[in-house]
Image 1 (cartoon, rainbow, N blue to C red):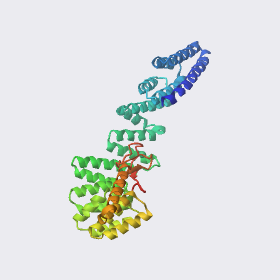
Image 2 (cartoon, rainbow, N blue to C red):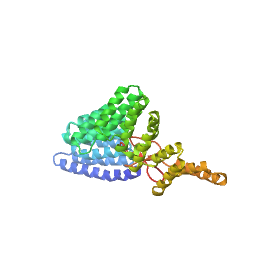
Image 3 (cartoon, rainbow, N blue to C red):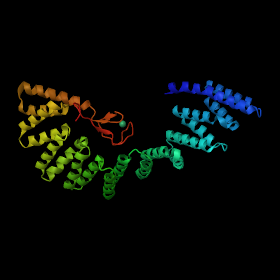
Image 4 (cartoon, rainbow, N blue to C red):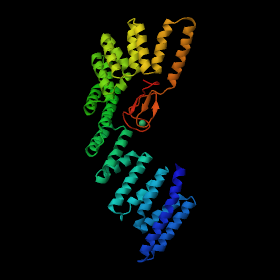
Length: 390
Ligand SMILES: [Zn+2]
């Protein structure tokens, strides 16, 4: 990063000198400050070349008092320091710019925006929030400032403010905020569930499903709340909704769904439901659940046939593992030993494979995060499909 930015800094400096020289020549027609200005820039340049950036910054800031035309150079330098990670220097430059009473309104607003970015980079979210809140009043910076405010509220987990601000964004932007807002409601529900405030949790999930009826996360959380309260029929209703919202997430609730069905004596209904899901394109986990149900009802041969047929069309390591397991029970002697070895190998292969992947940035791992740890987008991490996944 630094290697990339340093040449940019040295390209910028001659521009700064040129700008100072030009400004000096222009003003020298009226007074003698021109030579002082160009001299000041050369002094600043020398400090920078001698790796004394603090003194260089002071020299440039000193020049700002002489001529307002150098503002753009100072803004560029401030941004450059921020990108190099030298946030304190960037803050000093931008704070000094704002303190100049002679600045035009537009330059002052731009300096405020840059200072807000500095505060964000420094993790000073309260100061950044106050500047972005001020800039929301300016039409040209409104959307950008609202988006930054949402980033701050996500960071500090103030979900109510994130919801309010996202609604403001929705009024002026073409990009839908529904999915994100539903996730913020789910965050509130999750917090409430942990602190035992179940009514708040249920209310938040209802709001999530109103703003985004395809919110898988809200259905999962709602199902879990009902299940924990012993309301298995209601839990089944919530979990079953996922098939229509996004069938890729069905494996996330499959075990709980099967438990709820068993507790309500609905094994036949469960088998029918899972077979319908398979026809709709559900992954190998649903196939394995069907196979498990058939094996449990002493229909092991049918279970093996279903898996074999499925694997012909959609090869899958998980399916292969289950198929080997069924055959191990029937085999004996050397054949059984070989199957055990093969089973062990497939298990080891599966252990090393990520289970989830972000559709946006490609981040992959074994944990389902609703907000991607890499690109920070919401609801983009999904179970991996294909030979090594679902
Ligand atoms: Zn991502």
